[in-house]
Structures are given as C-alpha cells and as structure tokens.
Amino acid sequence: MGTGVGTRIDTVTAAADLGAVIRAARAAARMTQVQLGRQCGYSASAVSRIESNKLVPPRDTLLRLAAALGVEPAALGLVPHPGELRAGHDASRAAPAGRVAVRVLGNADPDRQEGEPVRRRQLLAGAVGLGAAMATGQGRAVASSRASDPAGLLEAALFQPQPAEPMSPARLQRSLSAARRDFRAARYAVLGENLGRLIAAGEATREVTTGAAREQTHSVVARSYVLASELAVKVNSDVAWASADRALHAARESGRPAPLGEAVRVLAIAMRRSGRAGSAVHLLARTAAELGAENSVQAHAVRASLLLTGAYSAAQAGDRATALDLAGEAEETAARLGADPRAELYTVEATPEQVALYRIGIHNVLGTPDEGVAYARSIPPTVFPTAERRARYWTDVARMWAQIGDHHRTYTALRAVDQAAPEEARRPSVQALTADLLYTSASLPKLREFAARTGAR
Image (cartoon, rainbow, N blue to C red; front, side):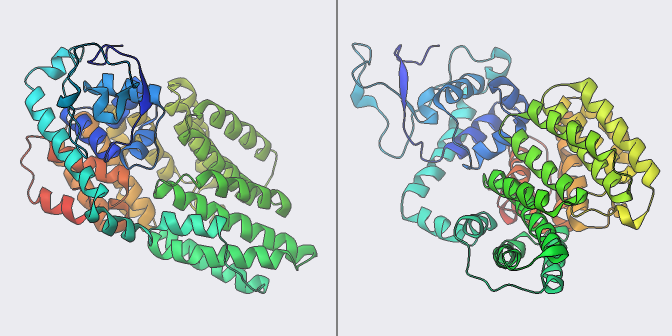
C-alpha cells in the first residue's frame, strides 16, 4: 500500500494523542465506529477503545485505519523505516515535534473525499494539537485526574490488593449488595472505590471458612468479580479479562449455577471485546444448554441472559441468523419466567423488555438500525427498574438514530442518557456519539455545552 513516500513502514512512533486523531478523522470522513471497524476487522467497541487510548492497535491495523480514513500513515504515528526514505525526499520538511503532517491519500473513497480535504486537515490539526498538550505540562493534570478513575481503582483492586480482615458471611453479603446497588444506580466512581475492599475481604474470608459458609463466600467473591468485570467494560478497561477469569474460578468453587452462568457471561463479553466473538457465542451457547437441564427459576433466568449476550455476540461476528435465533430463544425463556422475583439477576434481568432492548443493539451491530425502531418504540424507558438499564436503553436508541442519520433524535437520546445516569454519558463510547454530532451541520441547541459537560470535547 502506498504511504506517500514510497517506502516500507515498520516503525510505530507514539502519536501525540492517537485516539483523538482517529476520532477526528472518522468524524471528518462521516463514518460511524461500526463502519470503520468493519473495514479494519475490529468491533465498534474496539474502535471506541482505540479512540479513548485504551487499546493500541498493531502496525498492520494502523495501516488499515489510515487507508479507511483516507489519511497519511504518519498521522497515526507510523513512520518509514530509517534509511529507506526515497531519494530526493526532503527530511527538513518533516513536521516539528508534537505535530503531525497530514495529507489526504489519493486512494480514499472519492465520494467521501470530495469537498472534504481542507475540513479534514483542520479537524486533524485540532486533534493533534490536543495530543500535543498531553505531551506537555497540560497533560499532567489529565494524568493526575485519571488516578481516581474507576479503571485505575480496578487495576489496583486486582493487582495490588489491600490487606483485609475476614468478615462474617452475612456482613460480606451486605457489602456485595451495596456494591450491586452502586452498579445498578450507575455510580461507577463509588463502585470503583468500594470494590477493592469488597474483593480483598471476600478473598480473606474464603481462606478461613469451611462447609456451606465457604460455598456462600465463593459465591459472593464470584459476584464481586462479576461486578468488577462489568465495571471494567463500562470504563473500557482491559482488566475485564482478569476479573472475569477470577469470577469463573470462584463460581466453580461455589457449585452454584447462577454465579457460574453470570461469570461465563462476563468472560464471553471480554472475549468478544478482544475480537473473538465467534468463540464467545460458542461458550455462551454451550453453557446455556447445560443450564437448561437445571430445573430452577434462577438457572433459567441466567440461561436467558446468556442467550441474549450470545445473540449480541453473534451479531458482532456478522451472523444475523444465529443472532436472531438466540434472541428468539431468550424471548421464549423470559416470557415463561414472567415477573417471578426469583429470576432476578445481578446485572441483566431476564424479562421481555430486556430482550427488546437487546434487539435494538443487535440490529445496530448488524447495520439494520431501522429494524430496531419498532422495538425502541415498544419499550417505555420507565419499565427498567435501574438507572444503569435506563441509560443503556437510551444509549442504544442514540446509536440507532445516529446510524439512521437523525441527528436531532440522537441528541435527544444522549441527553436522556445524561439525565438517567450522568456517569454513563461520560463513557468513551457515548462521548464518541456526542463528538460525532459536533461535526454535523444540524442545529442542536446547547450541543457544545452538553459536549463540554460530558467530556466529549
């Protein structure tokens, strides 16, 4: 592939702020995260993590990103191998430190490129300017603020655990219930602060308990790690893998089907986010089949949640038929469960409304958002009992309208996310939706104030 200097590219340098450059270039190219991900072999969530600097893609992916976005590889931090510059190339014209020279590639999509080069260069220049600030003293304040982020707290909880004393099983259960309330209320900063103590206490307690109390403690520890993995996904932290793996080990020790199913679900989500959607579907379907033999309300509820996650994962893998089949199975199971309180799970409820909510997301991923409109309109958001689920509804609705191209309804949905759960509106993937609106020609009242308040600009 051409690189603008006719040489091999095999050295990656750190772009001042790679995520901001890619996000600005994508917005200038009028592409969604789904569209960009498909061209590069990544999921939309992976693109979101790249844009928030949580994931650094390998060199070959950066080259594909540059081609898809229609920018020079140098804009993404790729430079020619030393000594291989074509004769006659004037090295003195290189961009000064902290800046990246950007040129729209000639092989970019002509429909996207026409009328865009100047605007795209301006947007990229602004993104790189932001990154340059990160490389100077201004960036230190940002780095300092991240020290109190849930992602950093999660890493500390998992890899630098606090010393803790054992608790009684009843007290440990109360602490877990409080953490669950924080998650359901979308109080992620508070949850991040408290999870470390909960996990440390749980680990200390299961070292000294025996018999039925030990099994109960294993269950509490498993669900503590499930919450940690769910939180990691919310804040785009790669520790989702580690926490999901620990959840699975503790759940197996508990011998209880519900914690085991919940642990498998978060492990499958971590697999899907790393690009292994097909393997995630296989794991979820197999575990759901095993739980089908368990004749209990909660086991069937967990099975429904696994089927829903499997349906979404199949959509990520591009398998429409499997995605819709699994969603249909989940719908049948949820309908049989009804409003039985014993079907209550720790994060995702097994209800017909949850199935409809997942169908919106499935159609967003499949690139058929118009098929999700009927489901969105069939659900009154107030039917969801938690702030986290209401925010998830509005987020999926925002993604749906964004793909359809209705900027006003996208903005309305994003404001509803912020009203339901302010910390959800500050998630990188939701910030990206808000940032995309900034580059449209739509007249949206107080959009810039909203973007600044939610951290999207």
